[in-house]
Image 1: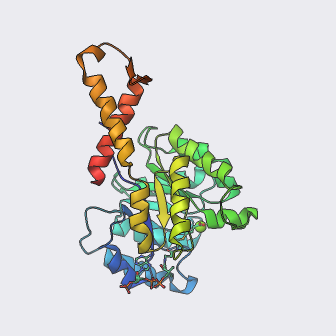
Image 2: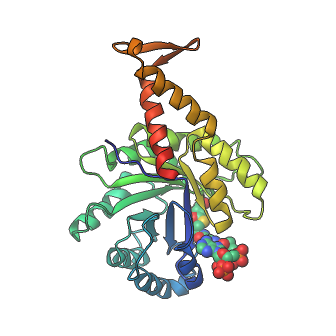
Image 3: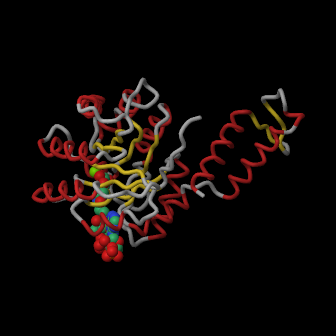
Length: 292
Ligand SMILES: CC(C)(COP(=O)(O)OP(=O)(O)OC[C@H]1O[C@@H](n2cnc3c(N)ncnc32)[C@H](O)[C@@H]1OP(=O)(O)O)[C@@H](O)C(=O)NCCC(=O)NCCSC(=O)C[C@H](O)C(=O)O
Ligand SMILES: [Mg+2]
């Protein structure tokens, strides 16, 4: 059976902030992304790497996946970050500003060359025009489904994307939605996770809730976060609703009845239900069991 993982909340923590690093272990985020890239000033990269090496020597809570976001690998800073990440052995390394299959190939080759265990995965941020245009190729080339690939998740970087395209940071994301959907489609085509970008105004809980709802309806698995106050709402919005769980139970029950045996299509209270709905229902119930 396929491994089920939760991707509802991926909190970014600046690796330069030791207090936030400590706090991260106590939080209910499904994943924590320790950031060496944009949240760390250029002159403090070495300090941030040192913090991470110390931090990863400690025990970590088992409920959280860990990732380290490095700088682009075609820079000396990115190369040094990768050495730190290899020493820390997080669950994943998050590559920023991925634009081509070659960007992922370079990281994958470094992991393989250095004998990194296969459990260390790659996550890719798509946050430039080229990254969005090439989303399907990037998702396909190194995804789990394609012979031992390491790529496990795509994350959208909406701030960089807005900056590179000139799309205004206005309320609502009408002009971004077509590009976001391209990323969702690419991830679904290759059966990898897909995480929506950050909501900067962490004091605006209503706006955040609205964006979570939109992201869920678009098919995202969760959201990248910047502040602990966003974790509980994200976990709630990206968990299956009670109504969806009740529906799933009724589908499972209906297919378990003797009269449904040998049928791929049944009538459930005047609606056609197929076996693919049964598989969806079982997956939803399994996921809910994991998040309970
Ligand atoms: C945005 C912040 C700078 C706000 O920080 P601060 O003013 O300190 O917030 P609070 O006083 O409300 O904090 C309350 C307590 O929570 C801790 N805290 C705050 N943020 C985090 C965090 N991210 N992880 C863990 N803990 C956190 C504070 O230390 C306080 O703790 P305590 O004193 O013990 O009660 C700050 O939230 C922050 O730095 N956020 C993360 C910024 C970041 O990671 N940016 C990079 C990711 S964004 C991105 O990737 C964009 C993307 O690339 C794109 O292109 O779109
Ligand atoms: Mg970015």
